[in-house]
Image (cartoon, rainbow, N blue to C red; front, top):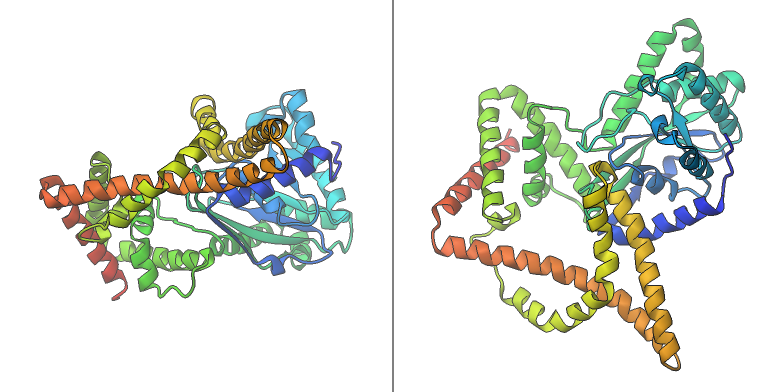
Length: 443
């Protein structure tokens, strides 16, 4: 169990993720950094949706190395274990891992107590597992046992648990929005005396408090039966929800707060209107299946007719720069996607690998290209070429998104003009769902 703080590999990963977070995500925001106590031992307790991205994105917000608790089964190979230890990852053993898990965890926890005593922050995924759904799963007690254990070993240590909510608009693809939400800390010392008297009740009280805090910091859809209905409407009708919730600003946190308000209202409405809720569920399923068959997107139905003149003009005029961008940037952009589609079965790891490979491949390909230009040209042409790579890469990505949207708009207008029966039914269903949404805000 050798922890080395700022190892070359950790520093490399820190730099890689710092760059990747600013290019892989369309928008990203960090809220609540002021809630992180200064000069205190800290346990970060976060929800877990996105494999290696979750810990690394939290890690780059700190000015010191972060230590991560991860599942033990990935430590089975000695070479992998050595690599993970070198970047401050530590195993947490579960019964399914076999062997004497209690003894193994005690050894790891004892190391964590020492780290906390040195005021080195540790991240634990309090749910004990990961899932792609935007909901808080039941919390495990490990984070509390670690905090209480550290207080017991080092009297007066004053460990703080800082709840963290992670939000991704898309956990797989590039161009999503990402929010990190740090909450108010929970002091372990507030529970140490009660734990000595009644350990079980105290652990449950701590778990309930942390659950409430984490739920407030993340998108938490608790209705399992209607999860897909609530989730799909939240994104398909995002503009309508923002208007109903009187969105105050343009930051991700403002959109997040609107979604929280919507979820609270619709879950309450579903509970009080079970028959109407079932009809809404059926309508949502019909609408989702229908637009998939017609290769349409839900946002198109906000208008009777889509304007396509300016997008087409942009596509025509921008084609030369787009072609230049594709020729220079296609391989480093496309290869990570091909790799994860063919080699990575667990979808939770897709965005992590795409981002890491993407940053590496872009700098590798760009380095080779710039080097060749520098060798075969004079003066500082390579510097201008480097600038053109960055500009053309960003432009080509935006061009491709515009192309896809324009194709959707053309198809939408065509179906509308021809009064396609399937299309007209979808318009009716879209209006019905919107009327239910409007009704939520009349109550």
